[in-house]
Length: 395
Ligand SMILES: [Zn+2]
Image (cartoon, rainbow, N blue to C red; front, side, top):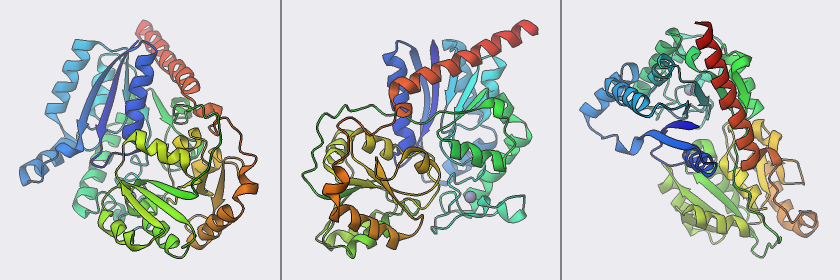
């Protein structure tokens, strides 16, 4: 099969970018021809012309339309598989693909169809108004996208403009990484269940053969931002001098994170390569995911489990679909950091008892393995293609 993968890379690389690259190599490893159409938010220049072009592009992006049409006509892919489209690509690619009878698959990585920021969460660290039901004028003027009222309003208007044009109807299948995110979308927007599939993220199974936990440290890997709860986690560890925490990542709150360097039990390791992250994960006692937003399916969770390292996660959404208490992780009460503190203490104090039953094979569930992901994805691609041929014959 010839597959065109589409993605807008983020300024701070995260799980969606990791997924996109992993998907590309997964398809290639099965001998498919993969071509990519990508943009990079790091290329956005901080000047007024660039900003104006960006705003216009959210409604009508002549350059992207031309580039994308050319790649479709030149490469003639069987499938277009789209990922993040904001802010440099936009939704116009759906119709361009449909005009050439090419099926479109869209993986939903966040809540952007509901909230311009994508997280139902704003930069002040609180749930945004888009998490409430029904229409209100206040929803237009919010700052959940990049903390800017102007940017958020423009993106919100652009999304609703495309919604009014019926753009989402050009998508053949929406892939949701968890049942929870599918349910959430169903509650907010009119999405046909015929077009929705739950396809959990995947990661390579590391096939650990030996359970060695020599270093008693806890690990955080992720974006330094409010929604990831990194500051609350660091504050929690300042009251747990007997517990060691290693923090890996980068992001807008970097300077705030670095202030915690003065605590002896906290190591801010900063940005690390995928390979280095793997080394830390393998050795950690537990990986902590203290997120304050309803995560869609954090790659860190799957990677940690693949390294046979249990996770400490809030008892919400996707975590409940993947984690079983005491089996491959531990829950704490969502947004309750004193409860998280108690959990961390408990894990450290009872580690010998808790970890004696951890199996030697990966803690990753079968549904999150590469093989299972590939099997399901290809069946969805094939179904979309069959339906397209049928429609063509009926025309
Ligand atoms: Zn919002």
